[in-house]
Image 1 (cartoon, rainbow, N blue to C red):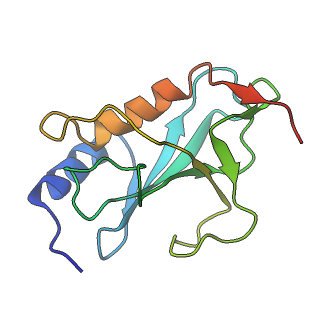
Image 2 (tube, rainbow, N blue to C red):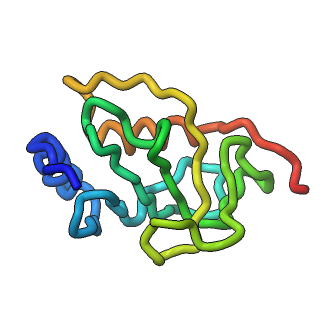
Length: 137
């Protein structure tokens, strides 16, 4: 287990100014409660579970070994967002507050000097504005 970055602690304090948070004892996960979704979703808000990379903020959340989870069952204008994956069973290693679905990121624009968790949540919200969708299976 690595020692948490002082940046992470500062970023969590800043994020807590805007959202109710739950952070696990080892700073591996943060759940951001009731993030408002853009218009068009079948819900007004979702909880967001962020798996924090060990080298945060050098690596952004949601890329490579870490994932971003949202509440299961989200639809945009009656369709499933293309980068959204339902978890068919509890996901290994995540807190059991699900059910969760994960948002698939291969790359995000991230500057470890400038960006923080508040900015990340806003990036996620921006990505969910008019997302590409797929037909239901």
